Image 1 (cartoon, rainbow, N blue to C red):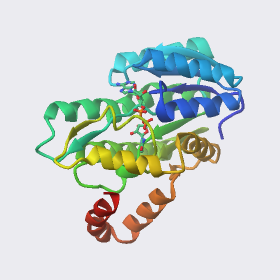
Image 2: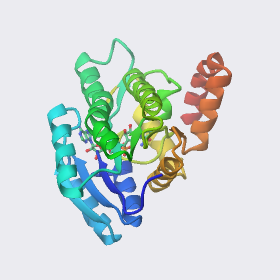
Image 3: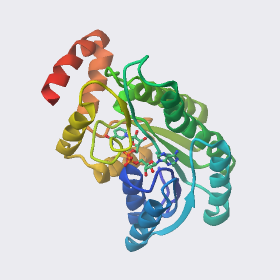
Image 4: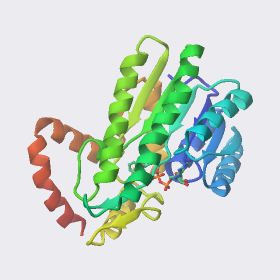
Length: 268
Ligand SMILES: NC(=O)c1ccc[n+]([C@@H]2O[C@H](COP(=O)([O-])OP(=O)(O)OC[C@H]3O[C@@H](n4cnc5c(N)ncnc54)[C@H](O)[C@@H]3O)[C@@H](O)[C@H]2O)c1
């Protein structure tokens, strides 16, 4: 359960889902440390939070740097007086087949999507254990559970975030601290525009189309994620598509691989 008037830290909060989570926290009377490498975007999120009745501070933080995430934790203690919720949300995408994606792009995505979450947990969890309260919300994806082709770097980092969060939930049991992993399907944000793509087919155009069609938008994903934290649920699948894919994977891991070419056809 996230306490009322939560003191929260959100990474990658200069736009997209991070901003939506901040807005939902503002509606709960939250005091939010808004962080991103995009400071202008983070400032805009701060204005939105204040417009909704919440309080906000901004700090530039590149989650791929341990020293910057440690400094984010220190600033949170200083300005918020403690942390009730850390949202490890910052993320990027890389598309392309294994062997074709340059190693420099593997480093880039692992640094942000995986190590960014590792650092967020490493620096904030001991603080929460000390407090005897708090919640960790790690943003993964349904791509962390079902693995579409030409998405290897993204799939691998998100699968690791799922594993890390489930581990954390077990380690934190009985300590007053919870952990939730969010696994959405596609919804509209800017993630594909900042993506590094090495695909033969116009994959990003297809993704753009699917994202725009999804009626469960970033604000609704944010609301569902916070509700899952309230209930101390380890997994949150905010989209029906994600629930179906996850169920199918458990029921028949082989069948799902046969579905990918069909899904690709439907997406065109
Ligand atoms: N949009 C989707 O369809 C979708 C689906 C499943 C999961 N997700 C996940 O949701 C999370 C948020 O992504 P989004 O869709 O809102 O995308 P977005 O691109 O709109 O937002 C991502 C934010 O992260 C920031 N960021 C990038 N690199 C950073 C770094 N090194 N340090 C700090 N911040 C950094 C960006 O500036 C941006 O504000 C990501 O983890 C993403 O993988 C998105």
